[in-house]
Length: 422
Image 1 (tube, one colour):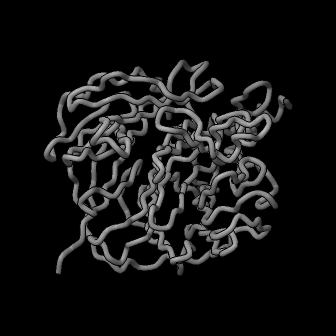
Image 2 (cartoon, one colour):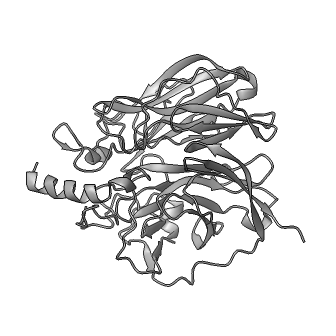
């Protein structure tokens, strides 16, 4: 490894170290006031796995940010959450919320219970690490199983874990670690950790690439593990509900590939949502200095990182000169300057009729939610920022058909978007 290159990366890293806590996206101070929004509208990329050399198109205007056709208001449901990360509704309407320092909270009848849920595993709460996603088993009403993602270990050796436990309404019981990332890493960056369930009751889990330069693994930059099919880093993995590998995973019979890998070439996905009406999986992924992505993710595909990217080093230099390559899938949208995307929801409800089938992507640095209008083929038609004024960590559709937002602050809030009548 070239030591002068590593030294220059260290200098750039020191300048933006605070932004790494946001999710490792950087907003350039030299960027134009109207950010370029690059939108990929190729039907080939949407509907088939045919590769394309054409990069996302570039629109330097703001004309494709359409005015919303739906009037709404923001309502603060509650506050007093410490860096909340994720939420999941129970069948009775109560709400589970994770706090990154390591607490699982419950909101009962609209009120935050002052006593955290007992039985949560010990977490490595450092920088981006801690207690992250919470998700209910699709058959929770029968088996009472909930799933947690969290970082485990020390500053010198840590990794993402998935645990499941039964929830009796007051505490977690019978906690079991069902999966952990194959390689330990140093530092506190890029854990990924979003969970999505598929109709066959298998789960997809996003795993980050391990961190920015100068973080290394086995003598090379750790981010290169995103292209290594024997590593979990920089991947989406597909698991059975007990953590085992489904027999129809795309690399199940591939030589030197881990059988749980579902897609690869990812940097740090913190937005993941599945649309059961179209069977499409969408993700939002942090870039470094710009180059955040919206991707339509398919089994077995390579999404390029770090070989192909619109992102740049925090120090300002190029990560790669390539923006597209045959055999690698282009993003549908590239955000430069960065939004630091976290939390992603597909809206399927009747409370916002004009939003049906659209995506809503949270932003930590942009401090907003991007309403992304899709056509029936899954092409991005327009974007509309919804100002929140706080770091947005998670976006979910509630059982009442409204949109809910968690803000990643020391005094974090749960915010609801609801229609304005009349």
